[in-house]
Length: 212
Image (cartoon, rainbow, N blue to C red; front, side, top):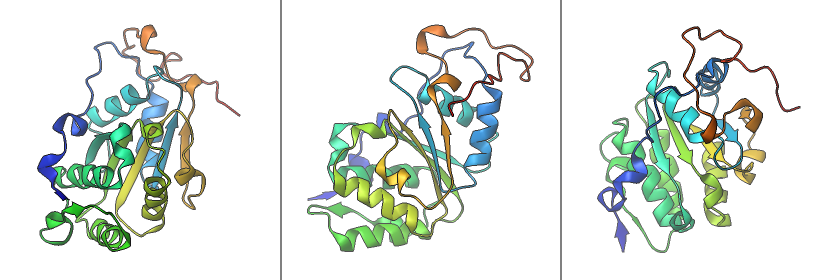
């Protein structure tokens, strides 16, 4: 059974909407822009602390140095074919996948080393750098998928990842690249949205307390 781009539920590829008046965490937005020059950026905090809102707000500012794509994950992504098909769909949707190779790749069960290598080779041929946000990565616990993400981070590619998770995934802890981490105290709980100040350099928009 082959899984094609059209089989991926489109809402999984949609950026979340954030409410008006969302607090502007200017320092974190700037850190995200700097962080995506590396292969992987981790935003780690508990449920409801605004990880997705921060990443969506950053993508909406138009200051990202590269195109940005989104993939929301759930328990179904513990199936390697579902996960990698979603990742390929997000990449293709960004318009940076060349024809042939990655553009025509349809994954099948069982997902094995040959398909993994074809996927990695296709990602290496992206026409320009792409930032891919993987939301709710903590939903993925299958070692095969997590090992594949680790392999992707080791493989040369223009793809940059922003990982949103309630914990630091093994794939990140074992990465040789730089990891930018935003902790819960840098964010804002969903129930504490306030109108953003017009001055992005204000103290409210630039909290100073950091996790050691």
